[in-house]
Image (cartoon, rainbow, N blue to C red):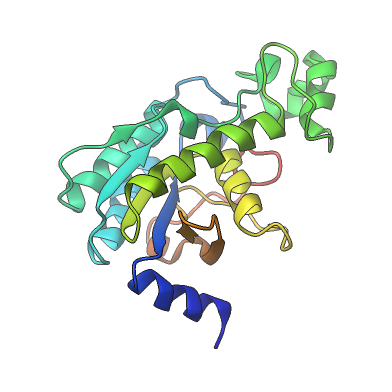
Length: 234
């Protein structure tokens, strides 16, 4: 029996929490390849259509016990659309689910960032996980610590249940890295893509059941060259 099917059986027995992780819908800055980070950009019209599509999909699956979201507008609006479709009374907003803070690069076009803020750009592209980005930016280790801690806090409250988390590309990649450290994520986490992680609050064990699924976007589509969702997500 595969590890995923074993985990599903254990989830049914109440050991695992099923965490459905959704990236926010598209923004104008995604489309223009502008680095967002903690800057508060709302969804564009395509992003709102994507939010409706993923909400429709999730409303036809097992009902979640709760929905949690980053408090940034692009995630919050996506989460509120999902909550309404799933008949959930409210969204629990948590800043720990925000995107990585990108320091001096926030608000710059990705193509211009290296020229305008070379030191911050080098830090952003660095493979050193403890390297912070000048201008108040986070290191990858700091991002991982806050979002993984948030994940386990949520799992502790919902053992054996199904919950939805709405977050951002960089944050979701860190959650995936924690859940599956031996299998690097090479693909892109598209806007409103759905990933599913089974998490044991008792042992800390995680199993990735699905990653980056966008089957609900056949009509709406995704912008392949939009900024964010890959290894340089922000």
